[in-house]
Image (cartoon, rainbow, N blue to C red; front, side, top):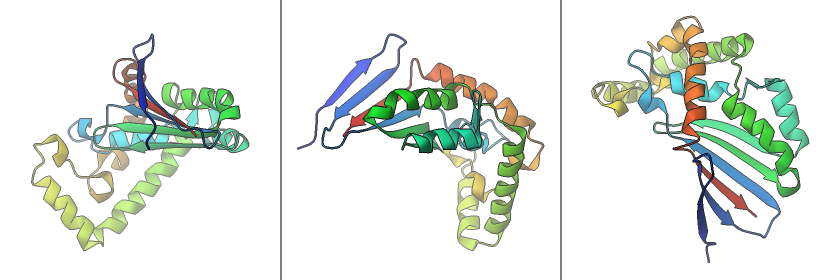
Length: 200
């Protein structure tokens, strides 16, 4: 039998859903921010995806390596994912380490720093992926199919199937300007964020 889902709204407006499963002493938190690639500005497709990939590459006072080390030390897992309608940040951690892990997650969500070195590395990785895609007929066809509906918000081709993505072809300024996107993420946490916690 599935555990009941409890819905709450915090004083800051954040909506949360809690499912208690007490077989294993771990907590899984999923933060869903209602902004994704479907909201990318015209001509800058891939900005939301790049932002999602970058927010855990340096945040608050920690570098990417320090974030990774802190999470590993706590026996936790932290991931960020960009979707069409939402951006997700997930934390899986032992209950006993939750209080120590939450500040790291909070920094990733609210205070990403977008370091130059990490932006450059990710830019090069995406350019390499684009070159590989050009040799993949299936991926190329998928991109052409979506371009045929480019007027619709879902018609934007995925970043990995694009040969013209400005976010990776231009300098990294657009990605750094996505700090504004990160700020909007912070604002979205109040009226629109959804967090699911499963205590096992």
